[in-house]
Amino acid sequence: MNDSLAFDQSWYAATAHAAPAHAALASDCQADVAIIGGGATGLSAALHLAQQGASVMLLEAGRIGHGASGRNGGQIIPGLRLGAADLVARFGAEQGGALFHLALSARDLVVDLVARHGIACDLELTGHLTTAVRPSDLDDFAHEADAAAKLGYHGLSVLDAPAAQAAVASPSHGGLLDAGGGHFHTLNHTLGLARAAAVAGAQLHEHSAVTRLERRAGGVVLHTSAGRVTAAQAIVAGDALLGPLNARVHSRIMPVANYIVTTDVLPDGGAGLIPGNQAVSDSRFVVNYFRRTPDGRLMFGGGERYSPRPPADMAAFVRPFLERSFPMLAGVGIAHAWGGLVSITRSRLPDIGRDGPVLWAHGYSGQGAVLSTLGGALLAEAALGDESRFTPFAAVAPSGFPGGALLRGPLHVLGMLWYALRDRTG
Ligand SMILES: Cc1cc2nc3c(=O)[nH]c(=O)nc-3n(C[C@H](O)[C@H](O)[C@H](O)COP(=O)(O)OP(=O)(O)OC[C@H]3O[C@@H](n4cnc5c(N)ncnc54)[C@H](O)[C@@H]3O)c2cc1C
Image (tube, rainbow, N blue to C red):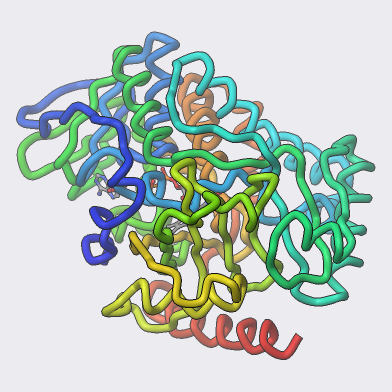
């Protein structure tokens, strides 16, 4: 389905830096670690492993960065999909707090890598704002800010309705501002990670889909149509695009299609819509998310759709959601429209784990723009024998969806319909 989601029509594809092509795997090779997937998870793992002297081969089915990492909303939303209050309620202050802080470190890791490797990706640390679609959201926001502060994070502040509407020219009852958030050009970020990984010594191969992952005494063999990689360990970083290559990994996530547009260049560059240039999402379960682009457009994603097929006209599909959030943009020209597959897990926590020599990280549940870079770093550490930051996530790995691969789709649609109804009825 990913092929029909119009990557080439995306604003990211239109504004990406030139990137080198990487030859397909064409022979049998050996490596310490073989990686499946050239998104931010796989590339971050490759970079961190190569920097420690490991020999690394990364196999990407298509082009580097053409998965979710090169086409997402570019919103840097600190932490996990579950906030401080939820984490503490589920796991207690010690374990929940450890997860909360580990997840927050993803943002700092990305900021550090961008600076260290000179990755030009329009990084803007202007904050992330969640706007309230229901008055009762403000109680939840206050509870979350309080829970985060108790864990030592003071980046959250609650905005009343006038303050939120001054920050975003869209109807809302208030907002929760996270000063640690922001946005970036996610494709250029991913291409920059690839460059850094290659400079560190990792070998990258595009157009090299792994068709079989074989376990053998002493390691793994990854098969492609044109060659094999024998390695001591494998990292599975295919996220929503992985398919049934590994049943355990595949069963823990649900791929959900999501659609985004950018408008034509706006007369004021969007400054009147979001004066502080924050990344913004609303509090709907079927979330709308938006931000300004450096070339003066509004990037807007959202809307619910329950068919596995993409809409024939993605721009027309997203437009009503955009115009509901920004009535003054009624009839605005839409320059780019594309889609992507978000992978969600049952608990909305990422699925990070290992089974002997096979390690994986995926299922960031819509919040993987920076968590993916952390996920890759944790896999690299674990592959090199240090599981101290890997274990806290592995210990809370989500269970599979009920109904297995066959029924998870229909059951999920039923769940989404229920939440979408709740969004509409408040
Ligand atoms: C439309 C959309 C909007 C989003 N917006 C945001 C946002 O604003 N903020 C946020 O935090 N998160 C967002 N996300 C989520 C975020 O993009 C992802 O969580 C993150 O990019 C996942 O990175 P990844 O490297 O794990 O996966 P990907 O970037 O998808 O990379 C996986 C790669 O593995 C390759 N692959 C799969 N199977 C094989 C195989 N068998 N052999 C070889 N290669 C294989 C794929 O081709 C792909 O390139 C969004 C996602 C989407 C789709």
